[in-house]
Image (cartoon, rainbow, N blue to C red; front, side):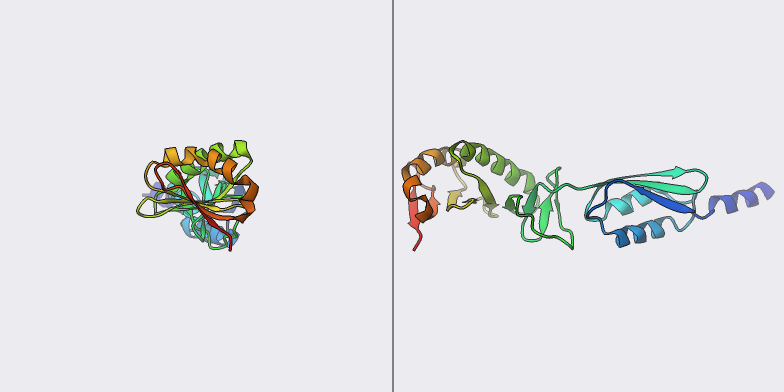
Length: 209
């Protein structure tokens, strides 16, 4: 019993300091401090490091956290931030794993494409964007917006150019016609507002008024 009494104070010995490792540019430092204070409040040895890890990883910009004890009484937290590869919907991003996240302090990143789609469609939209980008890049075009509706219809905006209505059927064949469409319209490209590719063997054009 005397030994047990000696162990209990050691178990709940307070954490003397927390060292955060990693480049933190976007993680809210106040929220991080709050999570660490809450999860480490029971003491150096009594704290559940998995709970600390889960708490840190629940923060919007955190991709991964590793938590370890540094004897005699410190905690080290290694934080890896998420890296956005695309703007997602009106208030979020897709990270490098193509998972959507929605930070409160989000600012649109103009250099990244703007993608949109139903919940859980991030990878599908990203793959479509990449496939279409590979098609239009050789002819000097680039894509800044890709959107898929709930019913599966695709819409695309070309940077400094028109909207493309691709629809939901025969998308591969329709995408394959973009090069020929551009060749036939490039002399008046700046006058084109919208191209509708939802025809079996052709397209229609809406001109800038």
